[in-house]
Image 1 (tube, rainbow, N blue to C red):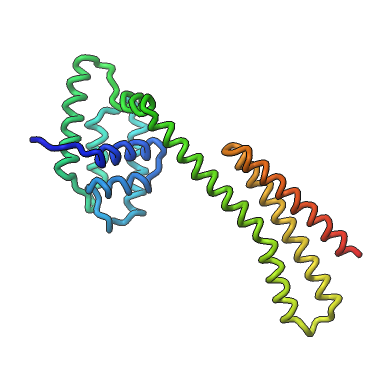
Image 2 (tube, one colour):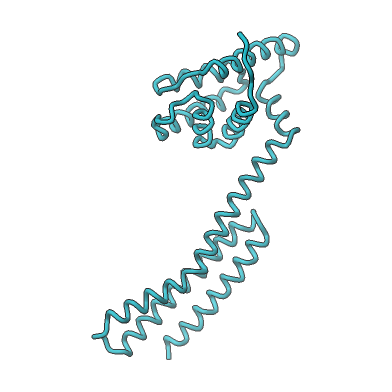
Length: 230
């Protein structure tokens, strides 16, 4: 049996391993679909649950070999539209034969440890970690910008509500408006402080910007509260 391990397949296998290390079942499913091993229409939630069980089972097995991994994965995914394309089967067979030969030469050989060392030496693990950090930083920055836009949206909503309530005396309407605005600033200040704390582990710049924004919301809250007491 012969075949070709294409660059696309190499990338999918590497991404599959990185996703398994990170317990990212969604990415595992994506790579199985890309390899042609899983039907794109399969129930992702059900497959994800099974994959979590597979990972837990393998992690609790201690010394795991290549054949054990294949047997567990294939056995648990048998109920789904799961198949092994010829090219992927070739990779599995080469892995099984290679592991058998290497274990005869070195009984302590561990294919997972060897794969992890290879990926680390070639920078794949570091690249995956950087991608995770960049994704987390992007999420935090998006949240911070959303918080920055909230005061304008809050003012517009309050203005709309105020126009609808023309029957309410002006003094009462202004008091309610100030009270609602004070509560809004307090929520924004607290939320931004929490987001800044989370951002500190990802980016010091994002955390600093978040703290400055949170302080601004705090000042606005204090100013609004003083106006309310007048």
